[in-house]
Image (cartoon, rainbow, N blue to C red; front, top):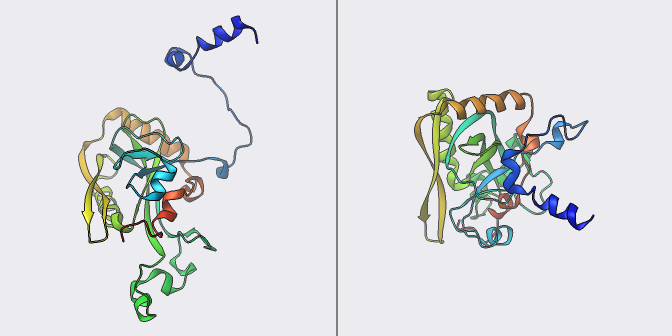
Length: 235
């Protein structure tokens, strides 16, 4: 490439992206459901796992686990397609996640069963509520997972969705708790009024595009899922 060509290419960098017409057509032929990915929105809690995966990112920051960039807005609408599942973060897990609790023995999922077996530590397999959401000012959907300490918040969101029928804007927040084993963040949810027309329309468009796709297959598991069964977690 000549110097003149390099100069011309440099002039068409990211700053000019907004003025260029978008390309048309498919970028890849033969794409299947398993080739499509949806990122997870992960809240940095300051654990060792966090710092290894997202070095230098401030506690409380909401991060897109694919782009590794912060999600600027905390306001979102929910897109149909969420689900409940069970997750096993152990390194030697035969089944990492499943929608059926019966894939594990009771001693792995139930507190009472563990106590009867003489085990005092938390069950290594725990339920999650996975919601597909579209954040304000974000172009693509993101999965928000409520697990362990924030599971009750996920149940609250599910209840609110039943009342509002998807028309409400919600704010994802967090609060700090400390039960004697160190401080940690718990996700919170609060209604934020009716969804803006443009955001609601975009969410409806994504609902149509993703209809029929299994969110469990297109939202990849990431480091933070396993982190909640390691010693650096506060429970």
